[in-house]
Amino acid sequence: MATGRQGRPKATILPGERMRMDLSITIAGVKFPSCFMNASGALCMTREELLALGRSRSGAIVTKSMTVEPRDGNPEPRYYGFPGGSINSMGLPNLGYRAYAELIPELKQFGKPVIASIAGLCEDDFLTMARVINQARPDLIEVNLSCPNIPGKPQIAYDAADAERLLKRVRPLITVPMGVKLPPYFDPAHHAVMAEVIGRGHVDYLNLINSVGNGLVIDPTRDRPVIKPKGGFGGLGGALIKPVALANVRAFWKLLGGRVPIIGTGGVVQGLDAYEHVLCGASAVQVGTVLVEEGVGVFERLERELAAELNARGPRSLEATRGKLQEL
Ligand code: RRO
Image (cartoon, rainbow, N blue to C red; front, top):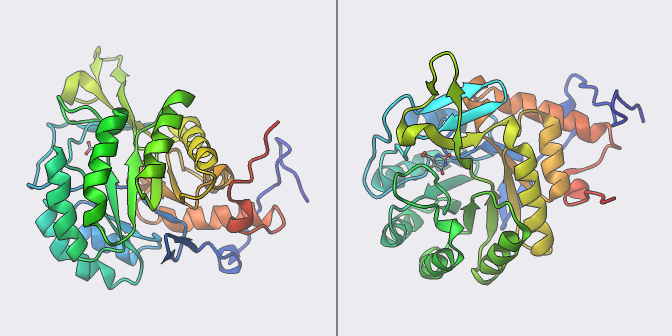
């Protein structure tokens, strides 16, 4: 096997590479044509954006997290991309759950899974939305317990008791597979507590991680933050959060014994980043910052690059790679 500069297998991208590597995956019995898909929040708020995802090579259509009422979101500027990543304080701009419920049948015509993301502003909001969205029959419903950008509202999943109570109430209302999107945790004690909550919560998959909340990026030429809401504090995404994302995927994969499928989100910029997520235990990966930067063409590039990484190692299938991180 050829090895590259850092001693890792050299991924040479051959024409038609993607064709020879199966990148489809299954989560909770739902088949995805590709392991790459958009992260909620990235180019997925309007009907036009969702239809563009449907026409693209994204392996699923993930909606923007929805609330009961439509929202304009936080004041602008509220998103800023920089070389290592991005910061956002969007504040949940979305069309409201009724509009997404109406859109779901149209989105399902693309023949790939539709994931409806719900994010209540209070516990009862989750129940209101779960009832109606479940009736619209998306392929999966994702319960977002980790929005960092609503002034005065802490991220629900940073309180294990709150998260457990909510999951207990919402789970019986959802008959399609239910996932939970968690924020990053930075201590093994927190991973352990939340893994127990997830283990008791009849959760069909985890999405790890949401943005790294409440970072601050400064424009030093103007002595001020690059975004306006919350004094410039916002969720960090992109390349710089990959180590945090990988650690969370790995920690939950091990604590849950690989029994709860994981969508790895955070720092997927190249095919190799996706490979690393899969090594840590991810079944699929989501793309936020680079999707916003490159547009929906990013999926084709990532498929090609991941196929090259897998081919350089054998070839090895996604399934044979999943969770196989070697420890020293
Ligand atoms: O809309 C947002 O500000 C937002 C949400 Br809901 C989320 O879950 N994660 C994020 O980084 N931004």
